[in-house]
Image 1 (cartoon, rainbow, N blue to C red):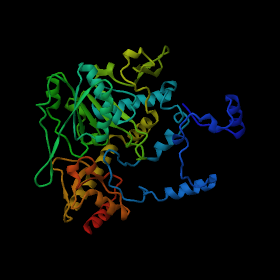
Image 2 (cartoon, rainbow, N blue to C red):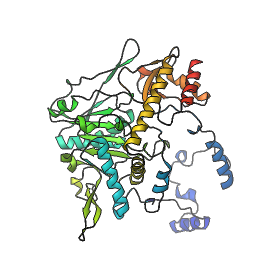
Image 3 (tube, one colour):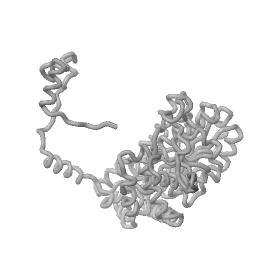
Image 4 (tube, one colour):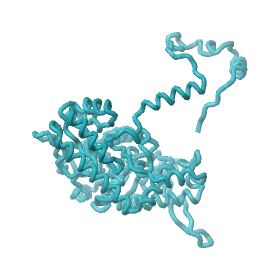
Length: 450
């Protein structure tokens, strides 16, 4: 932990005198002049009040999601957070500067983590979950490392329909232990401009593979064909790793039901705001027989000497708890506060409420897609089943469409040209239960005028 404490002129003079130099410039006289104190064109200083007014004015130029329609998803989804979440996670028992780092000091926090783990297992259909990892991206990297440790192999397969940000983190994770990451193409563009999916990866799956990583639903919004993948991988001693979406798990099968060995998900959007992406919280679950290679911490339930129920840190495979060479990863903490927000959200909604969130999101996305498909020059590109996010073909580059929408006060979709040059004319648009029909109609009117 670190902070900044300013020094007074008198304190600076005392320190310089103790060092034996007259001025601050003398302290850095050994630095070449061209590298020391380059000219900065800075404005005149402002008072605290003036600074606050200036920054407040800048903030007012931002588009507010409560006022501007938004159809942007691509890994960050806006769901309604009940007021109970903010109230409960702000209680002094939970909200401390050390909350993410030391859940073991409080029975209340330990119990909350235990409930989080139980809910993650219920959602994913897996046997055991940890106290959380930093986010879904690090979870993907940890899953690959874990699979390599379990299989004693170094080859990881990942579909190119996995979120590109997650694949970047995976590449970073793999660079240290020399894990060989191979990306498999899971989509293609048909002659009519629609997108088709690739489902046969048998030529790449052999006894050298540690795991195959898939996202369900994938980054392009549709559902991957996961049937048979686990059997094909198990036949060669490999593991199926699935990146799931918590809300979608209310309406689609849990990864544990189709043979996943490790499941990762981003939990932030169930209970947390889309605050520029962070802080996040990664769900991480696996089969019971894999638990000794799981990163992070696991909270367990027990009874004390008097028979009273209690909670305890059962497994902590970080280098500070065990011999460094036995540590499973460098995940040394848990995003306990964000996990608590998700736990409160899931408890508040319950299975039926989460199902309703998913159903509303799907219904609104279907309405959006149907309306856009009626606009000349636009078309739905997905040919596979999809939920609440779908790629749309545009008559002009997607970046231009987004600029037009922005000028009208609308936040458009994700420009898929950033994902693949072959999709420069494609927007990935998303709806959640927070998307009103009036916003969809407004979007369609603007697109119709292009």
